[in-house]
Image 1 (spheres, one colour):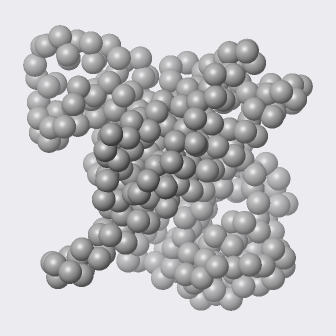
Image 2: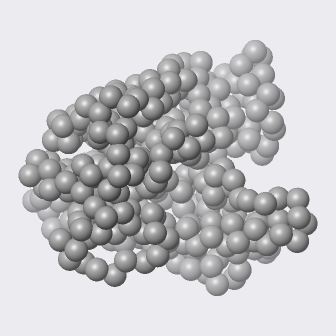
Length: 365
């Protein structure tokens, strides 16, 4: 079987496994306190997801390197676009047998964990599909949408806040339930040329459950310097961060934040107070309490997509073999595919991540 076919099948199996784990992740998070078996299960899931993320980033790196090489050879493309960087498509020219083999091991590990969720009595405690577990989110998977549906007003509001010069440092919190599209919207803002060009430096950190100050500082420093930081001393990292940010206008995205310690946040924020006027920290979180802990200057609540935008997004992925105009045209037809598709889309309760995941899995292509 060709690498392309094997890779594609593994990619789909990975999506299914992640989705199956996501829907019970909140219940597992609550039960782990009194159940050591559930705690061990969550640790296994976290390890599996980190392995999957490492592989995805490796595949993206291979794709980017290949794209740059082809661009240099053809002398028709000078850079790799942000959209290419956010795309995860397995092809025989972008990966080799070794990567496929490792991906298979990761998928099998996650599938075995999925098989244990019933024996652990883990339940989906949320209404609709919860496809956005806090431990599984990553700006690289699933891939960033080239077009956002139903988020024009949200994007305009957040863009205006980001471009404002009213304070030296502003913290903006985007709040919404898992799978609502916080990470995707933050990606668009972080990569939007008119926003990026207005800052001296920018960085993205996937924070997740543990607000590890040293790890976050290292990621930011590495993003700015482009070199690996070995230090694990918080004081040294704070000093280096201050030196890199002093007098500069910066845009930092802290994705998927769960901090509840106000003192910890205040110390973490100290190096950022030395930046230039108009510097911004954008926090995405599922908890309104986090917005309070971070003393956010602006809080933006992200809501579900409406029925029309939900269907359009679902159709785009369910019929992704066609161009966007064809997918959208299905909204004007009464067909069996549309009737079934709309019932499935309705079950997703306006959650973009669920619409994308289910649309991909049910794709007719």
